[in-house]
Amino acid sequence: MHSYRPREGHRLAHDPLNSIVAPRPIGWVSTQAGDGTLNLAPYSFFNLFAYRPPIVGFSSIGRKDSVANAEASGEFVWNLASAHLAERMNATSAAVGPEVDEFALAGLTPEASLEVGPPRVAESLVSFECRVSGVQELTDATGAGVDAWLVLGEVVVVHVDESVLVDGVFDTLAADPLLRGGGPSDYFTISAERRLRMDRPA
Image (tube, rainbow, N blue to C red; front, side, top):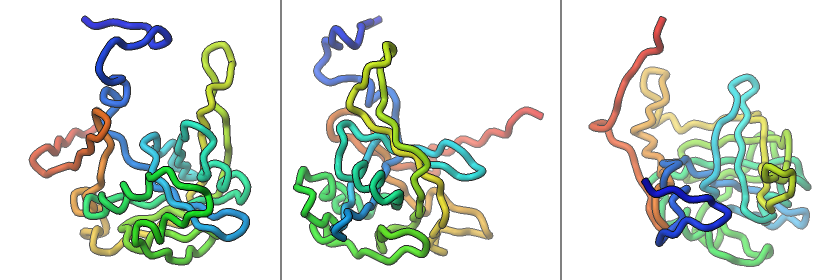
């Protein structure tokens, strides 16, 4: 058993935490700065935290443009990164200045949202328009800040391409979500062959 204390280092070629907590949905988040500049960035720390009201969240290592824009405007949009958008999603992860429009950088189309200011990615099969419900700097066990920021948002509009609705049910396989996995560059997709169905006990 390889055991280690994270504060003392993992003694491996690559930090295994991101590989162990995997695969993870990608938080492909669009925001808008006060001067109107569009921002689009992927976050591998993303998930759904509540049903009613629906609340999603993403965490940023460092206070990046997405965090600053979401906090200032009170709004963001989550866009599903399907496998066919992998290269363009990856392009939006480039370390560029806040004046750069990542929609243009990646050749993506901004589409007006219904309830919030930031646009959604027109090429994405699913988008959630969100109003910020909280921004929190994460802390360690002693209460000291760690320069990692959690942004939570209530989903106020859901957009789903009808091509991924089958008899009124969202078809996860058809949406082909891209999932963040192991080492520095590993991503995964899902397949019907790997599906496992289990009903909750009565």
